[in-house]
Image (cartoon, rainbow, N blue to C red; front, side, top):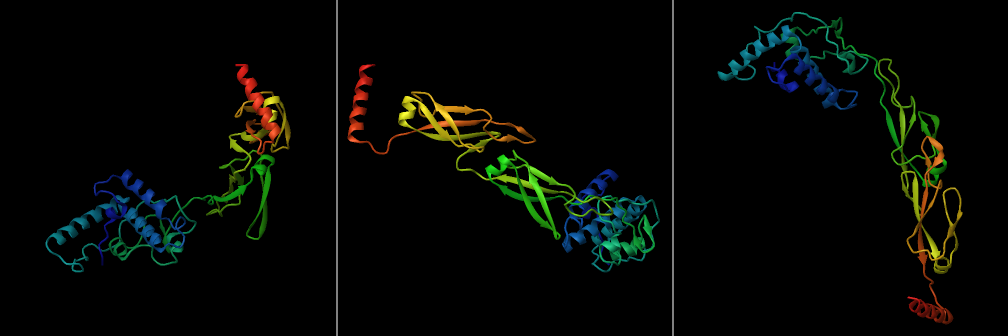
Length: 320
């Protein structure tokens, strides 16, 4: 029979108090629980070892007997004892009982059912402590739990900026059912849309989790989004910039005409109130659209235009 170092299993010192032992157990139990690691046999075995170690170290009677055994075993090792030669007869037998241990983390089954039947304890535990546990019932160790809510699921969804402006919807299949979820106007990258009760199933009668759609808004070649405001550059021809006029400007709600004052400088920014994105959960309120003027020079200049530009340059110098 192999000696089990329960202190090492929980990662605590031999002089650890009850609070430290319980803290270490809860941390490790959450990490290695079968529900958190489905199909992972190593995590399953580790979880059983953690429960066995806590079963002994959390019980003053069992811990006292175990510490006496540990001292004897260490003394025997120091005298050159070989593995397998230790005299276990003085240490085997049923342990004294105690109050029930309640582990409130996991599944709706007892440990025997969780791990497919059989004893949830090692031969070492069964020989030294009789194979029973505080809180035991006929047929095995009672693993008492509270109802636990199911796991939340997150699904990534991409939408265009126009869909974010107008609002959109997505359809999906879940266990043969068609689900349709509405994406609200004003959604931005990182927005989560909740579908209540469409996550993982609950345990021990607990409620199901939720399904969340995590929104990613794709970039738009025309607009840059900053919060609820939009920014863009509008091309304006040289003559309109100098003489004034109007320029057609696209918005997500349709094109509008922007009045350009005479002698407008390249890079000037105009603010169009209420032409930005709708505010999330406040769809009747909108951000603004900031339009930067990009003066476009003529691609071709005729001989007559060149003469006129030359005259303008001369006049400009004379007026300085």
